[in-house]
Length: 233
Image 1 (cartoon, rainbow, N blue to C red):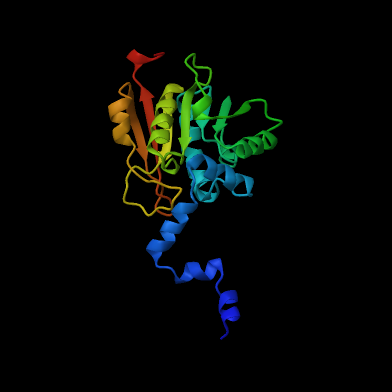
Image 2: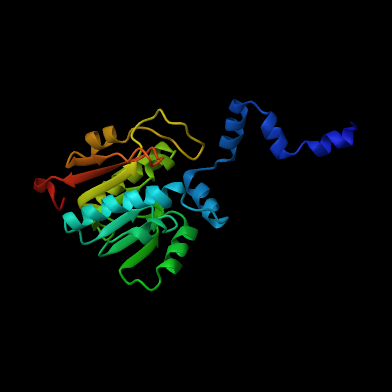
C-alpha cells in the first residue's frame, strides 16, 4: 500500500473506530461547547428533541401530565424547555407558554401551532431574562427531560431556581434522579431532588411515577406541590 492510499483510507470515521473508547469520549467532549449552543446547532441542523419526545415515552408522559392537569384544575402551564414541540402535540393544557433557549426550536413551535391561540412561545436567555413580577408564571411549571441536559453547574442551578419560581401551585419534572447512568457530552445525570429539598423548601413531593418496564427510558415523573401557607410567595 502506498503512502497516498494509506492517507485516503484514514478518514475521520475510520480514525474514530481505531481510537480507544476513552479517547473517543474525549474527542466528543472537545466538540461540545455548552448546552445552549449544542441544542441550537442540533435544531438548526434538522435534529429533534430526542427519543423521549416521540413514541411510547412521549405518550406515557402526556398521559400522566394531562391527568394531573385535569385532576388539579390547572389553568396555565409554563414549559421551561419546549423543544421542537412534538411532546406538546399530545398535551391538553388550557393555556400554555413554551420557553426554550434555541431560537430555531421556538420558531419551529410557532409555525407548528400558529393556528392555536392557547399556545404562546418565547425564546428564553437566562443571562438576559429577569421576571420579578412573575409575568412568566403559571399554575404549573413544567420540565420534561431538560435537567440532565444542563451540563454546566451554574446553568443547572439557575434553571432549577427559575423552574420553581415560575410555578404558582405545581411543578412537574421528568428526569433521571441518579448519577449511575451512561451519558454523552451533552448529558450530565445526577440527582436533582437533594437540591429541591435544600432550596425549594416551600414545595412537597406529592407523587413520583416510574415508567412501565416496557418503555426504555431512565427518567421518572415527579409532581411537586406548593405548601398552602406559602402560596403566592
